[in-house]
Amino acid sequence: MTEHSVDSNRTCPVGRSLDVMGDRWSLLIVRDAFDGVRRFGDFQRGLGVARNILADRLRKLVDADVLVSQPAADGSAYQEYVLTRRGESLFPVVVALRQWGEKHLFDRGEKYSRLIDTDTGKPVPVMTPRTAGGSPLPPAQTRVKKVV
Amino acid sequence: MTEHSVDSNRTCPVGRSLDVMGDRWSLLIVRDAFDGVRRFGDFQRGLGVARNILADRLRKLVDADVLVSQPAADGSAYQEYVLTRRGESLFPVVVALRQWGEKHLFDRGEKYSRLIDTDTGKPVPVMTPRTAGGSPLPPAQTRVKKVV
DNA sequence: CAGTATCCCTCAAGATACTG
DNA sequence: CAGTATCTTGAGGGATACTG
Image (cartoon, rainbow over all chains, first blue to last red; front, side, top):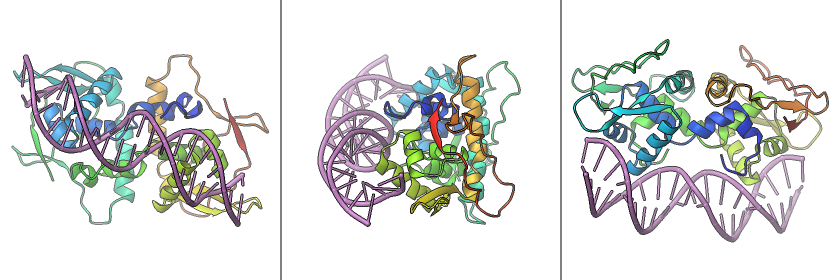
């Protein structure tokens, strides 16, 4: 939304949501986060987004309290990005978009991609949001490397 | 989504939905359509979007079978844009975004804007999608002029 | 009033090189 | 590996003038 757009777009909850999440990458990042992606490099390869853009989006999502960056669960010296409660409450948005896409944007028989755990060979289950607060999501056991 | 983004974004239903609806204006147009807006000028004033952009978006939404353009219900020689069944099935997306915004992006007590019918002075009710197919939505009785 | 045609410009996004 | 810094490009979007 630009500065020139009419006031109603910023005073409307839909418009304001779109201000935060309505760019080309943010919702895809959140989608991947629901699929258990946590690390910069995994987001980067999965999305095919430029590094600087990804860094910028992650920063903005952290600023917007959609993600938190916290020390990585494995020993590595870097951050991992996990959904906050606010981020998890985007679940219905992602689900609604997914269902609309499945229903209207795929030919019958055409198959959706899923994230595949290259260790187990099994699809990574989509996370369901926690029902209430508490500790952050448990560390992902999977290292998602491939999309099928 | 650009040409360079990784394949998963186009084979994922979420990504594909975002290809169609993920720009700055499309979902806001659909939101207004749910609120009963049908005419070019009403969209234009309500959104504050440039005319050429609006024309382009409307065209794309018609191409994507989200809107249909049909002869205006009043005598006027122009088109009006109404949601198709596919467009109406975006209702959960708009609702999810609205609820997320209401819950997380407004201070307590801060009030949302609503479209107001300037003739009756009453808020325009949000449309609920028809349960099944059938005729297009009945002509809107309201001329929405103002946002409060 | 409902669009179309132009022109212009900003900023998002990409590529790449660099650092701890 | 996880970022940051820099440069460049192009598309998306705005303003405005024009037409039926």
